[in-house]
Length: 272
Image (cartoon, rainbow, N blue to C red; front, side, top):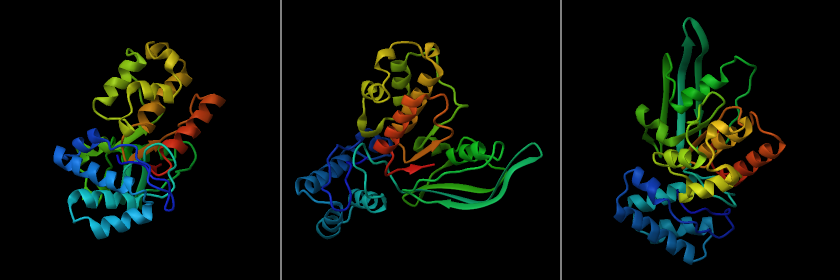
C-alpha cells in the first residue's frame, strides 16, 4: 500500500502509493493526497525508518493519515529491500475454535493469536486439518464452535469483508480456464488490485508467462497453472497471504521463481 523502505538505517525508497487500495478502504481523494504529501516530504529529506518515525511524531499534526503511515512503519518488519511492503497490522485470534465435518472433529479447542508482520508454518501429516485451518483463517469456511476474529489496525473486520484482505493459493482452488491469462488477471484485478498498482502485463512478466498471455488457461500445463495461482495470490494488495502446498506441480525453475517472489514481495508481510 505504501512506499517500501530498506531497514532502519537505509533511506526510505519511494515506490508510489496504492491509491486504488486506499480508495477501496474508504479514503477520500483529499486523504490520499495528504498521505502522498507526507511521503514526499519523508522521501525528499532522505530519511531512514527511525528518522521518519521521529519526524512524523514531532513535526506532523495528529491526523488519521499521519497515524496510518506511522502505524504501518512501526508495525512492519524492517528489512524489505524490494517490491512493495504489504499492510502489516492484521491480527487473527482463535478462541476455543473447533471445526467438524459431520461428526468428525478436524480440530477443537484451538487457541492462538496470529500476530501482524510475521511468517508462520503449519505442519502435520495428511488429514491433520492444515488445509481446513487455512480455509478458516481465510474466511472461506466457518467454524462450528468458538470464535475466529480478524482485525486490521485494531479495527474488527466483518466476516463478509475478510476476503478483501486475504490472498489464498491452494491446489483445490480453481482458475477460470476459459479465460486467457490476460483476461483472468484483468478480471481478478477488478476486485483485488495488485501491489504497487502493478499492471496486468507486469504481473505476467513477473511469473514469466509473457509467451502464453493470450492462450486460454485450459491449454496450460499444470505447472503454468500453478504460476497463475501464485501470481493472483502473492501479487495482490492484501495484508494476509495464505499458501497451501504452493509448490505443487512446479519444476525446479518454478520453485526457484516461487522463492524469488516470496523474497521480493513477502519479506515484510503476513505469511502463512
